[in-house]
Length: 322
Ligand code: G3H
Ligand code: 13P
Ligand code: ZN
Image: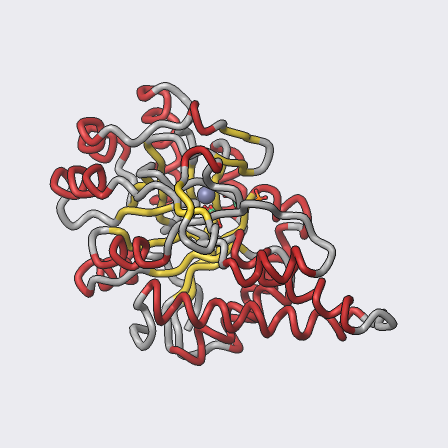
């Protein structure tokens, strides 16, 4: 089937109490690892591309890689989404260039300005059969060149969501309930430690999510910054020459719970990076003479596939929902 929008996926996910995984893609091995897992598990899928990914790999290469995946995965619906579109021009370029979904992220702007920019993108996107994700509230962490310190992050204000969605006409809404971008989602001071010395982060604000959902019944909610930073990858990285002390993510059971509620899209990028980096570091430590990129990219791709399969089944709950 051709690339699809997220409309049908989100409706089924909302009603079925599961979420769709939105995984960031930057090269061929990442696209292959993700899509092979989704195809085998018959899971609907969102492949997303950031501004940084377009700068790194080039828009055309990424679109063609995703189109190749669509051919190789005939049994599952795949949407191609712009992640964190910074402005109208970037969204327009992706809409004109074959994407089926875009995010306009004007969440750092004042409320009225966020409404105006989002509305402009929605009008253009809907005229072209493309759906729009918008954001209210500010996540901590790093995305492209924007770095938001934990103290500057703010939870979504539920009292603003109805006006925002009604005035903009957006199709889904990313909210801030305590997730954060990157592999260091919380400082050690924000966490407690378990008996093994592993950091345990503060729980997500499910009260905010529930308040938002009450005001927007049936409306798909998106969670960014939802990597769990698996400690086995962090350990492998640190044991093989890396230096990632106190990397910490969102516990998977909390994401599973969010997926059962109104959250229909869960964004994962850092866990892909960790799986790939851990595998490549381990490979070089064990095979120091290897220099053919296929020798280390093959296990890296397999690690991505295994990690995505685990997310689909145990976190998102979207296996066999295609
Ligand atoms: O939310 C940010 C995503 O992880 C994309 O990261 O901007 O480095 O491609 P990037
Ligand atoms: P992570 O850094 O938690 O993987 O979040 C990715 C994301 O939100 C992409 O938009
Ligand atoms: Zn994000």
